[in-house]
Structures are given as structure tokens and as C-alpha cells.
Amino acid sequence: MRIAILDDYQSVARGLADWDSLHAEVHVFTEALENEGAAVTALAEYEVRV
Image (cartoon, rainbow, N blue to C red; front, side, top):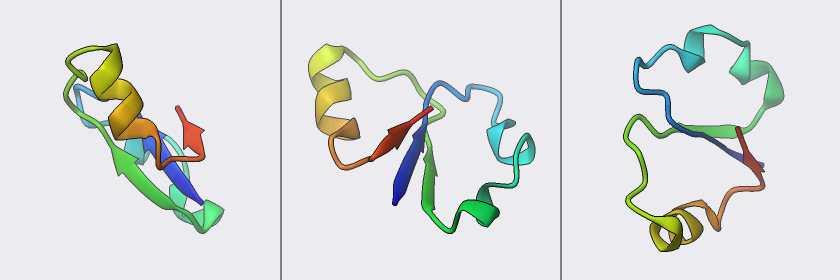
């Protein structure tokens, strides 16, 4: 499973939960995605978006 954490501008999301317990690949987006098209492209491969 692949998880995308969006808009973590302060880079704190990894410390707010035990992501390792999910046995998933977690990617944190610290920058805003430019537009809807960029978001669709960037997030298409993730099963979970937070």
C-alpha cells in the first residue's frame, strides 16, 4: 500500500502517528501541488491520501 500525506508544510506528520505500523510506503508532500492536474498526476499511484 502507498500512502500520500499532503500539505505537511512544517514536516511534522511523520511524528504524529506510527506510520511504520501500517507496513506501507509513506510519502510526505511538503509543498503544495501546483494545480488540479498536477495533483491528479502526482497522487494517481497512491491508494491512500491524507
